[in-house]
Length: 194
Image 1: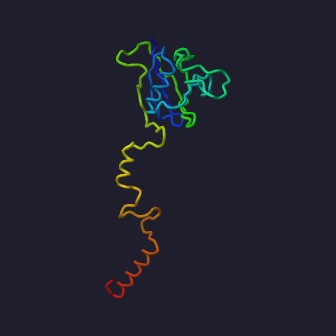
Image 2: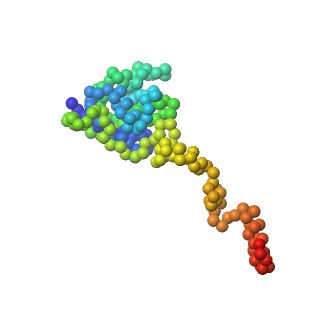
Image 3: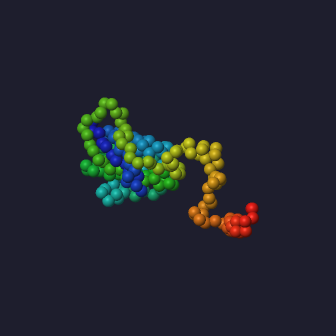
């Protein structure tokens, strides 16, 4: 049975990608689920694939369901179409769109075909992860969810003692500080204690 390796790029940044391996007899629904898993997305939204070419033009649609939108041709359904049936050349490309409100777009490219299954792998599988993927519902920090707990516990929104205000640079002071500095300088000149 043929094993297909696809590279799945985030459309906005080709340095962020996942390589996934899948059997040619598995379905587009299996590819859909492994892509979501590889980017740590949930399965709550609409999704569709488009057969594509080298210029990333959208061709025949392979959809999770038939949605309430205009179609030029009725879509094929992910749970009925095998991956192998849609491979037309050795560097076949697909476009995958997830969550029609957020418009997550992924570019998928066939990068390797093997005739040998690995008995140690359960297909489909993630074979390589490159770059920190986007967070589905906002920004992702390197600290992840723990940062919110730290921020709440220590109230990082208030300026800490010893730190200046935004916009101040070394040597800059506000008017009140300047007046105090001038009074201290006058006191030193006259020899008075302040």
